[in-house]
Amino acid sequence: MPATPRRFTAPEEARALLRQQHREHAELVAAMSAGDGAPALRLLAAHLLRPANLELDAASPDLLIGLANLASSPSNGKE
Amino acid sequence: MNLQPIDDLTLKDRVIRRLRRAILAGSLPAGALLSERDIAQQLGVSRTPVREAFAALGREGLLSLSPHREVRVAEMSPAQLAEACRLRALLESYALSMALHGDSVALLDTLQEVVRSFHFLAQGNAADEGVEAALEQAWQLDLRFHAAIVKAAGDSLLWQV
Image (tube, rainbow over all chains, first blue to last red; front, side, top):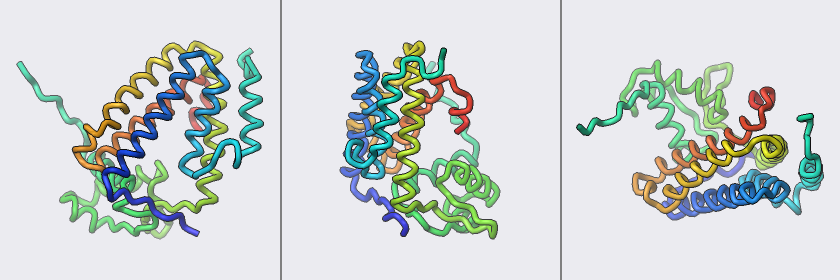
């Protein structure tokens, strides 16, 4: 089933999308600046799931497990 | 002396930009069949840059090119979109975790610069130029933002993916 094509006929809709994208980027950068690894990972994942209308907590248990593992693994193969 | 910047985009790049804007804004909807000749006529260019632009946008995943030389705006089912988003979220989260465990000062500088540019765009200043142009600028900034994260992971295989 093809996805319904997005149409941005109204400039207001495009501006709302831009504001949302900007807000999500800014929140992620703020979390990173604060040195909060786990919240930053969650914010990034939620941001990337949004185009598919997926909620991080409700729709992606496997992803949550993966994020938890990443957040709790300080070296992540760097050592 | 006030010199204007040189616009060094090739004709192919200009066609790519014009088509990408139309796709991102939805004026060329998913599944739309594109004719090399019609696009060339509409844009007032020869067919060669249009053909090259089709190939480039095919590599970006915005167009699907069939073996029979049929070119359509790429379609994605809701299930495919969800799958792609989940996979990207996992890969990019991995990239961010790698980046955060290294020296992330340069990454933060880049991301903050993108956020500032996005702020200007989101205020509606750039949108006055037109919805399509604003969305294309947002696409470029978003690409830069996420590419910086993946690059900062320092994993060449992940970067290729």
